[in-house]
Image (cartoon, rainbow, N blue to C red; front, side, top):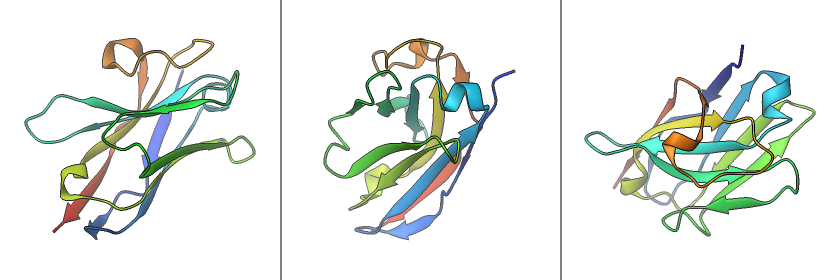
Length: 125
């Protein structure tokens, strides 16, 4: 059974930073692409970033490019999302997700099979 658990969400002021963690089943977190998604109230869930295992490459949504960094620590069995220069529009529930593929698919909800329960990020102005 695939298990993903997010942590690190908090309330911060605009311009601040947070680091989210995604841990879970070793075979999944260390062996397959892991992505971060977010969902704000009343909005659809959107992809934020994804990191592949095969080549270590990552990709980002335009809205977070240059501010967020996704990384992986195989020893810790974890994937992280470092979020800098946070804006109020970054406020959302953040989810990590995975799929048993070789590389990151397009950052669409339908392309990911396994999900965590989410961690809340709130950015105040």
